[in-house]
Length: 190
Image (cartoon, rainbow, N blue to C red; front, side):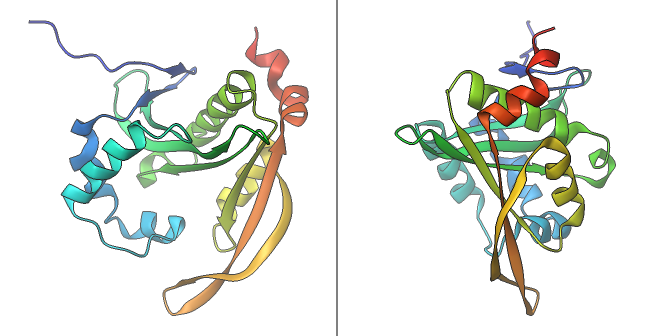
């Protein structure tokens, strides 16, 4: 019997991005209860397995978003997820978000590689002009990573998140298509 191999939608050197399947609901449910992941993403609500299944079903038919899982090329282990969302085809804008799930996979460049793949897809296939993100002020590692990738700070939504008995700023950042192309296009076409 042939073993089920995940679809590799976008491939990088060490990771690939694949579509989310209903079978991913249980592992995604477990990740939503990781304390550090909840803090870094600002997740405030609790979810049931059924709500996660419904979310997956809704997102897979939502034409204003592309939600993919990040997996290691060598083992197919899912280490996070990434999404282009709120895609505005008229103004050619979207929002991007990413999460690397476990500490052993953080700080190894997997997130940066996933971001480059998704940005290349957004600018090169979807013909987006501008991609933005929000990062909470206490997530300095992510902010530095986004800056290294070419995102620029556009502004700060002061005290926009209430989490763990305190208000926190949300930093708005973006990258434009031409900025991405100048930085990465030559490398990605080789």
